[in-house]
Image 1 (tube, one colour):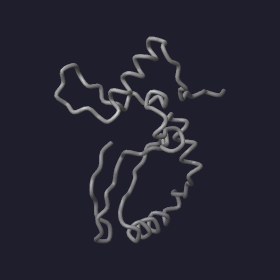
Image 2 (spheres, rainbow, N blue to C red):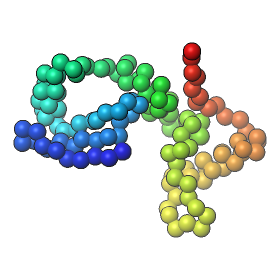
Image 3 (cartoon, rainbow, N blue to C red):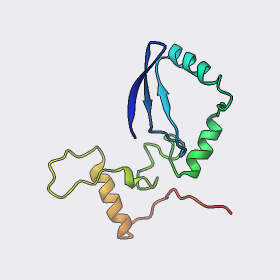
Length: 128
């Protein structure tokens, strides 16, 4: 989850290590023409190959990573999407501002723990 800026052919790029495929790799950000130029240069390396969205989806699903619009939506809470690890836990009497929906999410979580309501929940399966 880090980034740095780099230059290639005099153009600045942002290179991150915040990938969402479950694989170790990099993301390169720049304007459209810059990305075309650096992609063409990278693909001159015979060890590199294109990978489509289907590949990305397979990898991220194997890693248990969600994709907005598919596995999580405004109607699916972080609790249902098994994403509570991404939600900042505010300490009692903290001065930190609440995020939108924090109270509703906490209330739902408490009701689920008390078995007052049931929810759908994203789970993964290991197929052997």
